[in-house]
Length: 180
Image 1: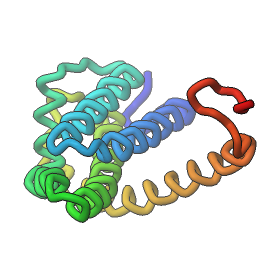
Image 2: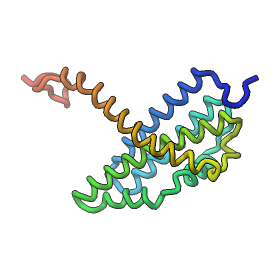
Image 3: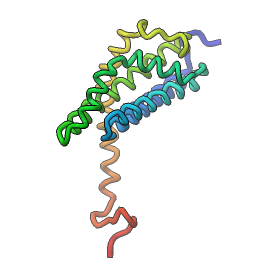
Image 4: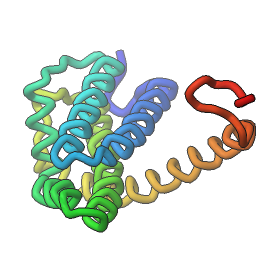
């Protein structure tokens, strides 16, 4: 039987992959130009991450408990709402709000994933996670998440560049063919 913190390295790698994927999804979801819809998208992505991690580690999951943990850990909801609502200001608000929310959403999703993985690998579950026990670790993970999200964004941009070079200049995106 496994004791806390003695998990299969492949399981921990899978958890990190899940966190990375959902961090990138959250960053993408946060650029939805409709205020508050972006927050709903990011929250849905975070809930899916917690559910996926719960399945990976074989712990029970409840959407209501997941929402409570997310709200409690990412407690800076007012800052997120502010960045989201900033998008309602024509032109500059959309740019500033989008940039702020992308960084915030990516870092918060990363930190949430790190906290949840630490908690379940220490023998906990979604139902007994006390956010106050992880405040310092969340803050530390949030700072790491900002750096990590930026690196993953750069990696994604680099891997997209070769594919973009292969698209002919006179390519018609509607038909998928070269115009005649």
